[in-house]
Amino acid sequence: MVLSILNTDPSRRDTENLPPHKLLASPQKPKTPNGRSRAHNIPGGIKHLLSDPKRRRRVSARSSALLFPSRTPSRSIRPRGKLEPPRFNPPSRSVSLFRDALPDLPHKQISAEVISSLGFTSQVPTQYIRDQMDRLSLSMYQALRSTNATASGATLPKTLLISVNDASSAMLPTHMAAVYSSAPSAPEPRRVMMYPVHQSILSLYCANLPVLPSSTPRPTTPISPFQVPVVPLALPHPESFPVLTQFLYLKGHAVTLPDLSLFNPSQRTARSPRPDANYTAQRLASQAVKVHGLWRNACVLGIFDIALQTFFDLAWEVLMKALILSSNRAPTTAVVSA
Image: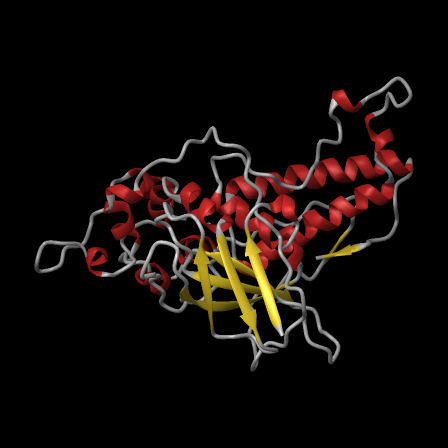
């Protein structure tokens, strides 16, 4: 059985902090006996990427909007061995679809071991590293869109052979995320969706992830295939993983989150003067499920980000008000569980 994972144009449909006073201070770079920071000696480390002039080129933010492609293998596969999902105990209380706000994202620091795996010491603030990566994230994201991969067999491989069609890309993917549902499944094989990712992005934002397997892509030619480790991720809402990843890559750039333009005046017509008239309760509930799934994924992965939290607060409030307007009555039962 051959599984094709082609991440190119999404239209083809083949489918994180130290206190502010520490962030304002310039971090002291630890020195090794030879006077160079430890990160310079780690192949593939983030500082190695930042010090390379060819990789520091800025990509114009005026480029067209980018959408992280959501691809699903053509066949289901069975993960080999026991796959341990990230550990997280969700809030025990129920969340009323109409009345309650989503709980805040859990605030957890990135471990010193993970920071060390990226080529930095624990004295360097995580937010400082994230700020440096913002210069590279758009170029990294574009590389994902040019990545091709083919998996064969009925079990989840430990490594995967991938290639990047864009010969000018210097920010090659380092891992392949194998995303599947954490819900109990029937005896039949699980459906696993494969997405190319960069270790620096996942590790800097996903506090519940362990140290990822080392990977320094070195293709013999710019477009020749190379092996990357496969990272299994069991998530409560696999379908929204591409949206969450897109947010992490494109912070500060145009990001496409679930459509919540519920009160856009341009959508009003003479026949439907009320903004909620264009949205049925079923459609609004579908949007709420997507936002709730995105929030659950962020909790499981240990992502804490103020901008993302703001989105969840606003999105949930808008959706709940729209649902009340749509139904013209206050509900009495909880239909979404956190």
